[in-house]
Amino acid sequence: RAKDAGRGTWRLFDPAMDRQLQDRRGLQRDIKSALREDQLFVEFQPVVALSTRSIVGLEALVRWEHPDRGIIPPGEFIEIAERSGLIGAITAFVLAESAALAAQLPGFMAIAVNLSPLHLREAWLVDQVSEIIQQAGVAPERIEFEVTETAVLETEGRTIDNLHRLRALGCRIAIDDFGTGYSSLATLSRFPFDRLKIDRSFINDLEHNAADAPIVKAMIDLSQTMGLRVTAEGVETERQAAILTLYQCNDIQGFLYSPPVRKAQVLQLFESGRTVTGLGVGCVETVS
Ligand code: C2E
Ligand code: MG
Ligand code: MG
Ligand code: MG
Image (cartoon, rainbow, N blue to C red):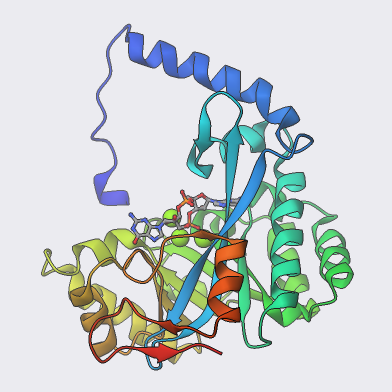
């Protein structure tokens, strides 16, 4: 988040940094074959409604199973994919996996897919999305796209245009990691958002930093006044969930309920109709 920026220091030569640079070059070379060789896979993290304490959606999160390096998180390769011109293909893959899973789940379940700002600027984005969703045979309402503040603030006409076209198609739009950039809640009213996701740095501070609690409450209140649903990201403790319930936040996502899991585990959860626990006493809810 902005207030943490600038704490890095640097030296003229740093062997660790040199190694990092070489690692990046290696990844840049390897990512070209990652898709072709089926090394990418998607995990899905449940989103839970606080009112019912049951799953209302999932967020798709991509991972790379590198043959030598093991599983690499998206934070380490999305930027490389963007610079290599592969982000469109990767998103198409994530979207196709998400739409296929949506087709197997109850109709109320929406799946969220993260969109890179670079991809959001492409003229062909909406046609590509439309085709993938149609092929999977799911209603566009079942897919939600997550975009970050910086993606929409550095706005060219095309970005806004694409957001409106995705919305016209029937897909939902969420603003992700809210609070990490410089946009105000007022700027949000200019964009066609359905949901706001509060960045986990605020949720993390909720218990320890007294100053953050009123900020979170204001974000929730104003978003809801503007007709947006609110998801709190990175909810890890019962206490955070309790505070968010008090503030009437709509949904939560985080390790408290579940980490991102593979498709088979998501299906198991629904097929077994098993009860969902993990939100403490009195919070047990039946799924389906
Ligand atoms: P994000 O969209 O904000 O996703 C949430 C991240 O927080 C995920 O990290 C998730 O595993 C992590 N997380 C969830 N709950 C908790 C919690 O309780 N505590 C903590 N500490 N972390 C939690 P992940 O999977 O490493 O993804 C990082 C970022 O990479 C994502 O942030 C998103 O911006 C990007 N990303 C992931 N998949 C894709 C993709 O398919 N396309 C694009 N363009 N970006 C992606
Ligand atoms: Mg996201
Ligand atoms: Mg996020
Ligand atoms: Mg994030």
